[in-house]
Length: 410
Image (cartoon, rainbow, N blue to C red; front, side, top):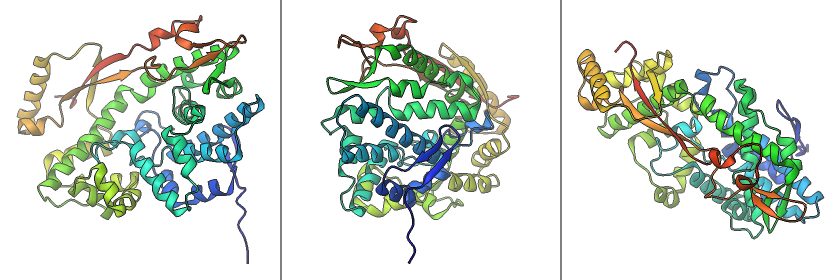
């Protein structure tokens, strides 16, 4: 009888060799729920602008797991006790933090399942896995939800300076080639500490934190909220909206079995809790279900659906204008009238091709959990009140911009 070694290593392009810290972590990585993340793009349709941005949620998950192990080692080295059980719990919590993402990550966050975010679905996956693993994930779930008494362990998973953000900024920067997102994640982790039971950064690491916050602001405008990315991702959400609208009218649509369940039926959070099979159906969904359907829908008899799909597949995207002020309603109405006349569409159908919305970029929020700076004398200060290189409080002010999408040559 042969046995499989569970002390595997991954060769990661960002950190080099990544070790798996425990057998249960290996078993979770091997589980089909987590393996599904190999088929979900980390950055949705960002590769339509940055061709190298083809990395997956699975790669990000392993990277965040690695940084969690590094952070735990650093905090332990500074005299704070973290038991092996707590270390495993925190590692599992970060490993599974994105497991609830649907196809194309944030792009279709509420398109397939209305009113249910990926964090809620992640919690449901964890609950299901906990039963399968004989309650070995109970501590991880408490840490994930912020119910464990050591608050800093939850903050490593979810906060304004968590290992999730430390990985995705560096990873997204690497794969997009946008150098403004490069951060000193190793330096930041080495400066981590604990003060009054909460995560803190030693004062000598303050400039690395400032650069981290600036990098986050820049990455949002240059990558995550890039105007062409906005055009592509809004196009994708419009496609799913039209498909669900047609499905509600019992129009026949090509779709995988799992996708059909979410196209032809509406599901709430209560449905997931009352019907265990629904979570398994969601686990069968990934980017390939969506793109496979869109390729077929290019030839659907519904003009709106087929036109939207061809625009996405052929990258003949909607034109995008972006500005600080709301767009004049008269201008929007004029463009809607042009398209309605040109393509003989109703007002409702035209709304799929001409629309305006807003995006908000906030690099730091003083209203939520703060980033604590720990000084040698034991004093702890919010970085917004402590930074001297630039005014961090300015980064906490949300920057709102408005965009208008409409067909080119309209």
